[in-house]
Length: 86
Image (cartoon, rainbow, N blue to C red; front, top):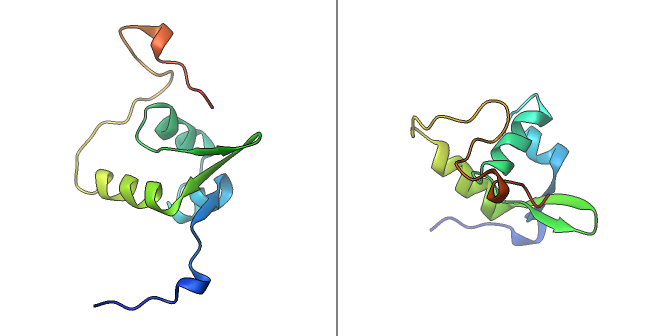
């Protein structure tokens, strides 16, 4: 079994930290993932954060999935339901 030092384990990440962790250069890419529902954010006050669990799930979901990521505005049959809460 893998042992972890849970005292130093970070559970919540800022947008800048999530970009770095996911090795993304463009904040717009992170926004697209968030708006398409592929990456689930957590909102505290006016700031957006990402939990370690949501980042891990995103990485697992994207690993070898061959999934196409929407480019540009979010595409949906019903645009009224496609708006982001964040």
